[in-house]
Length: 358
Image 1 (tube, one colour):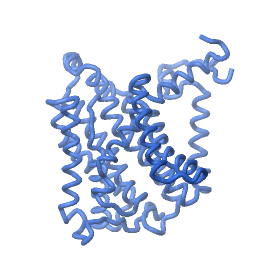
Image 2 (cartoon, one colour):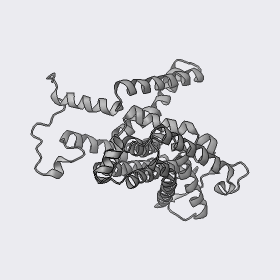
Image 3 (cartoon, helix red, strand yellow):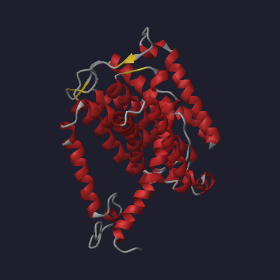
Image 4 (spheres, rainbow, N blue to C red):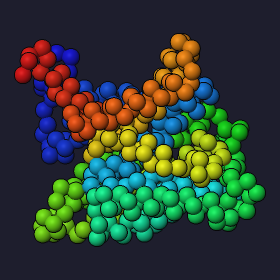
């Protein structure tokens, strides 16, 4: 058999609750981490770093954050772009106000600032839900972008209204600015993704994650059995916003290097991250990673195949890409609401029994 667990016995409850209870999964996972963390960064060039790896790492963090709120807690949010803007502008103010501050600390502090903002905009969730909450978070998206566009202090009174990331380092290695090395920014962003995915995985399997899922499934019943709706909903907004704020800080400072709110953090950004968790799978950390990879790699693939090899115009390739993404969203919402992650789980289950049919 290709994928088997015969003889893979467990002798403790802790071992039985492992993220990867099957030895084959554990070996494959750590081998993948070894290759991604210690081999690829030293062979990656500037194009692959900027076009594929950095956007995947950053969008994956944002997708995990939104999945915590929407997939696990059931609170619909359309304000992801605005919260990413909070993280980006927070990191810019910290970088310019405290030049000696380590970039790792800058990103973490930006996440905490975004978490505080997320709690404020999450207060309406205590009284409204569903479509009405989506409209409230959509309002936060437009308000935050307007705020960063009009409040001159946030962009240090620049004449253009644009923010530009200065050169900063982490533990002595430059990770922002024109002189940052591809391997350094790669490892910096991958480190955040690895740590945050591990944290999210443990959160959703613990007490707080179970309270989120109880609120998602039926909030009234959850309150009756002792779940505090205020604590559960606001903690989901805070942690989700923290993740998205970290993604926004990395998006601006490490990947783009310069940003303007109406372009870099528009409503399109919110929908992009939402599409990632719908296609990848709601309520799944793995689904967030798969969805981010899909949305990031699809434009690169279309540009390479349709524009590079077939010579099609760029606008036609983008039009086909939009049609394909929309069709996939409709397909997954109808046929498989849990996304590609559910298909992957089904495939693994089939491989465990192969070549037998059941």
